[in-house]
Image (cartoon, rainbow, N blue to C red; front, side, top):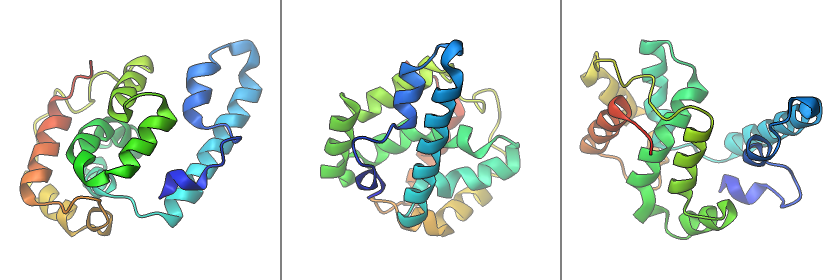
Length: 165
């Protein structure tokens, strides 16, 4: 799993975002954030990605919304969908986060001003193609839970109406 590739002593982006909001100390924080981002990229290149990426690729192409923003917005509903299938990994992520990982992801989205999906005001265009592309994605095939059409429909509905907290 990607999380197992991070030694405890390496600063993670979440720690940088929550602990270094002082502009006077921006350069060291930016360096830590860049390093954490680099390590996350390395971990993602080794680990398979899951339904989040399988879904946000077709969404980003259609709605011209940055990939990272869509991934962030898709994280809470994707975690909800996968809790049972993740088992031990969900518990480990929650322990690392210091609380339930779903709750922490929602809190972080709220903290950085992403408490509403950029798609909340949009209609779902080309729904059928988005579902087909998501189900065909290699990322989706690597998801902890086997993803069915109903799962993608549920995720789309959540992402297009998402309001966190």
